Image (tube, rainbow over all chains, first blue to last red; front, side, top):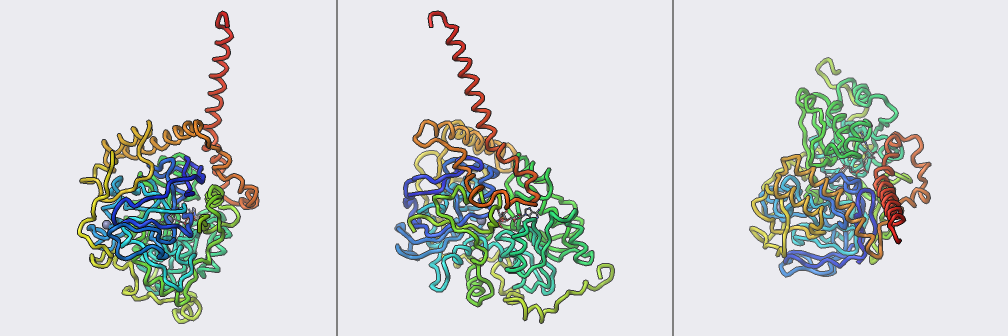
Length: 382
Length: 193
Ligand SMILES: NC(=O)c1ccc[n+]([C@@H]2O[C@H](COP(=O)([O-])OP(=O)(O)OC[C@H]3O[C@@H](n4cnc5c(N)ncnc54)[C@H](O)[C@@H]3O)[C@@H](O)[C@H]2O)c1
Ligand SMILES: [Zn+2]
Ligand SMILES: [Zn+2]
């Protein structure tokens, strides 16, 4: 089969690989029909995530058709069209029993501080991902769901991470009616978080980025007010001015480890790997939320330390909520929102790229070329 | 007002927002929010029909964090440890918990060594690494590389990327030329050659 393969920082290519096999009785093998590149994949692509091995196949957003199932699988059969959450999880450990699917303890031998994620380095369990023609899906009775008849393929694909995560991010903001919600980052996660904030009754939604074309999308798709932090000397001060010097009630970090806006922070983390991640957006969040406010962190950071302004967070009495998204928990309610026409997920898809050109997909998404927001990868066999 | 008790007024009332924004307020009630509260004990909800999963068979060595009591019942089997990078990674896993910076710094070092080893190894295959095709640079031409970057602040550091990626290749090239020259010179001085 053809699969995307990592060759070292900033380098990927498509290779011929063996089709994965059933390695556990509850495994399924899925033939991928659509996959996507996520902002999280960029942390791998840039070599920031420890234990990312040459030869590893990325991809944690994918849908497909069940090709084969292991002997103990009861809920799926060959031929089923399935959507697969980005989390690999067992469904039975201490954490899964409490709904913390992204924190499963039975699927990642390499680390206890993070659960299992498809195609996301050995630090997240060493599972090959879905930017390939076939993928091994462990715990087939737990993670995947049959795609509802009425749901479009691209919408289902976006439910496997970006949409679920944005929706989750808004929920972790504990928004109450009339809250002013600021979202740092107008990528897929930020756009969906901004959109979802209205569902929870936000009175105002503000999105901050430095890419004008993404801010335009935030205004159009998420009905948000926008700020380009590249055009302001001090975005925190701008946020204070915009909120009558109170600060936002809720701030969502949808940027993560490669945040721009402070050259020193960016270079020491994204380029030199001296920090777990550049905390620029997180620090802006801490400083622009009001005292007693809530920060929801969806942006991903590496396992090493980062220079976070914790003193401000403490002195301001902030609540910080965060996690990798437990994706499947979001689905039933998200399906209702999509069905009721509150949002159309694939409005944010800008590019559809054949698997053979995955190298260009990564470069364009990383350098933000051609107004790219969300690239979908189309495998040959589909 | 911030300096008095009331919150600064909003431009639009809830009624206006409900009329203007699709889906406004449908999840106002926290009971409608699937992630609230984050932790909710419901072991029957997952589809798992086991107490503890059957164990995936592990043929051979599988590294694990020493913060785990045992190898997890299920694990990924992408790219097993190998070479010098494998030895470095193994050391990171066996000696240091995830709490120790040494654990992650060794893993990062293993990654850099892995990339170098793999590039070298690729030259002995029919498909050597190609830094031009693998970096997707062609899209710079086909997808408006210059126009896309106009007026952007991240150009301040994007110039570093080609140096980070290409630098080691250039250094390796220089080293190869130097060694070749030295060998050639030595050959020229060898009596009888
Ligand atoms: N928690 C989860 O479960 C989860 C799931 C998916 C993605 N993520 C993380 O969410 C983040 C966003 O993902 P994405 O797919 O939207 O990525 P993306 O790269 O498309 O978007 C990030 C955006 O942030 C902008 N940005 C950079 N620095 C900024 C700053 N200082 N302030 C404001 N904006 C800034 C960038 O211009 C870009 O538009 C990533 O860190 C990703 O790893 C987390
Ligand atoms: Zn993701
Ligand atoms: Zn579990």
